[in-house]
Structure formats: C-alpha cells, structure tokens
Length: 520
Image (tube, rainbow, N blue to C red; front, side):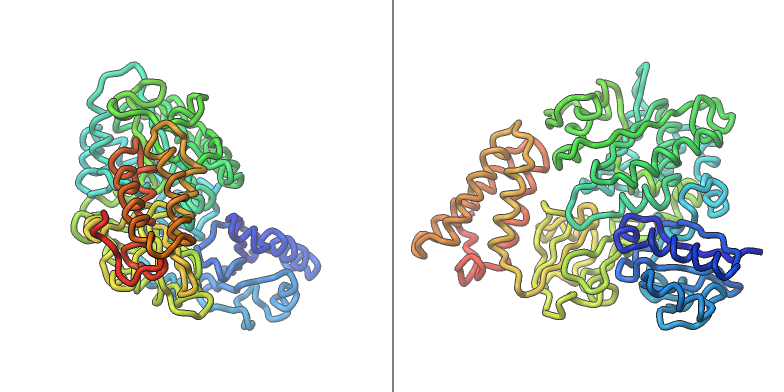
C-alpha cells in the first residue's frame, strides 16, 4: 500500500514553491524506493504555512510547513512519510488551532480532496445536494434557499432565493445561470480558492440553480488574472460532463444544463453584473441602466440568475442538509457562514470561515495574530477597495450586514485588509478616488468626472494652504454625496465610502483636529 502525500496546487501555494516541492518529494521517494501517491489538493487557506505538505497516517493527516525544496531530504530522513517528527511538523492538520476554531460549511472540503476527482468529491458529501434537489419540485428548491436566508456573497447581500424565484416564475424560451467570478477586490481570494480547490461545489450549486429556474445554459465569468482557476474549471466541467452531472440529461433526470467558462476582460467594472453581461456578450464592459433587472432581461436579453462564486457554492450544503441546518448559523438577518479573507499587514494571512457574528478584533488577533509589522493596527478596510475603513472603536461590532450598514460600513465579499499605524489615511483616500478614475467604465458623469475631481481636491487638501482646508473638505464631502446618489452602479456609488470613513475617523491625517462633518 502506497503512502499518500498531499501537496497543494492552489495558486498561493504554487507561488510559494509547491510545484518544486512536489517534484522534489517525488524524486526523493523514487530514489529511496518508497512508493507514494502524490495528491495535488487545494489549499487549506493557511498561507503563511504554504507550501503545507500533509501525510496520511493511521491517526489522521499530519501537516508539515512551510516546506521548501531544501527541506525534503531531511523530511524523509525524519520519516515524515509515516508522520515522523521534524522541526516543520505541525501535528494533526485538523488540530491546528487556526482551522479547528473555524466553522467551515462551504469550505469543508477545501484542502481535503483532490479538486478534480469526482469520486473524492462524492465521498465527502459532494452532489448530495443536487441528488436531493432532483427529487424536489422546483418551487421547493427555491423555498429551501429562501428559508436558509442565503444572501448574495458578492457584496450586495440581496437574498439569493428572491432572484431565483423571479427567474423561475418567468416564461422564456431560454434562461441562463451566470456566475460572477471576476473577483477583483483587493485582499479577496475565496472565489479563486473555490474554483481551484473545490470546483465541483460551484458546478453543483449552479446546476441546482438551473434545475430550480428552468435554465439550460450557464456561464462562469472568471477573472483573467486567474489562469489556474480558468484551467481547473474547464477541466472540472469536462469531468462533470463525463460523469453525467452536466449535459442534456443530468443523472437521468430529464433536466439539461450546459456550462461554459468565459475569461474576463481584465476590467474591475466587469465585476458589476450588467457590465459582466455585456462582456460575456462580446461587447465592451459598460454598466447597463436598470430597470430592467437582469433577472428579467439579463444575458442576451433573457431571464438570468446571477450570483457570485460563494453564493452558488453555499447552495449544495443547504440542499443536502436542509435550510434549517444552514440558518442555525449566523446572527440577525445574516445567516450561515462567510469565508473571510485576511490580508494586508497581518501576521497570519489566510481564509477563516466563521458564522456571521464574529468580530474584527477576533479575526485580526485570535486568527491573524496582529499586524505583520508588529506595530499597532490603525485601520481595517472591509469589503474591498470600495469598502469603508473601520476604526478600533468599531472592531467589536458583529460581522453582520445590518450592523455594518448601521456604522456606515459594508461586509462586501468578506475581504479584510489591515493597515498598521504608519498608514496615511489621506493617501489611502486619494487612492480610492484614483482607483475609480482608472477603473470607471465612463458611462455616468458622477463616477467618471467625480473621481477625477476627487483626486484633485484631496491633493489640494494635502498640499494647499491650511486656511483653505475646511473649504476643500466641504467640497470633497459634497462631491462624495453626488457620487453616492448619482452614480449608475456601485463603482461610483461606493468609492466615497473609504474616502468619507477616512475623513470621519482619521481627521488628523487630513490636517484636521476633528472631523468637519458640518460640511457634508
């Protein structure tokens, strides 16, 4: 019986040398005449330990990391292939505190299975949700998603079941299921990890959506900077088709669903759902005015369910274990769990899936271990480049869509970027405006022109005469108000969030002693 050794194939692990480590392990095992089975699993999401190599033993998997090529000979000398002691040994993987304290619902298989093995996927509850869905009326599938309280994980937090119900209730010759995998927010990577580490979960979630709504065609629109995700998804779709989980007659049910991958255009605004639809149709990625909403007139003018990767990926467990199981996690109207991504100036960056209600302080210190620099943490941006900066006074606020909205922040896609006390918040506010200037599709004036003027005003605040500063801050607040209420989409409408939160919570960085809110 061969020894099973796991080396991740996730992009983060590859960037840290996983490919070379895998090759070194294979070569050293051959040299010593040791039969091994090398499995290229997904990453567990403990990125400071990558490449994290695991070995299957009778007691469970034992982890070693971070492993470099130079460590491989010593690992074999120590008998790591049977769980031997070594300075890099981390103990049983499931007992690593960072993992053990999480509530992994969507990410339960991440790093556990071979991403492209249908047998492995099904051995770990894979396709249990679809099999149950195929035995239910379409209305009951939608009701399960509604009852679970699943809200869009892409940032808008709109109830997923409402979208599904709208599309299911329409009569059309063609309907679509579209996955927005253009994950462009800074500090986010849960979509990428899903597509690289557990692609069948996304395929299963989209297939359930198709069965529930009567759609027969689907598209996954993947960020162009994710070549490994694109390749893995394409291969996984072929495997699913060969296994009867996609195609004209899914598992003999009579339901047909065909899935296609589209590589994104490389523009941030194509993460906005209507710009994404334009891009899939072969046009320039420009935001569409609403109404009509995409659920009614979406891709190619047909009814379309559009959700992001984590939303679809959350569906299989809801169907397999029931809405009540999923709804029992979370707080208030924020139900279930969220894969939270720790990034920026943080000691232990990685993915933490927790039920809604966890706080930033817990995430940054109990999991993240504080700043990587060792300096005090000053600000945290939650929800991507358009999210607000959250000051320490709000770090004990439960992570919850409504609680965050009440303090002017957003949960967004669950990306958390940490800054220590050397951060200049005026510069970060300027960056937000400049980002919008570069990435705006240009269709609406508040976004296109407002962001350009915003950069100019912040420059005048930073370098202009001190006596003119209050007037310029008033101008900046007025400009932000126009962008919030006049922009066509979230690109222009949310760019003011980081700017205003920086002004409100860190006025000293703008040369003010107190926030000049009267100007707003």
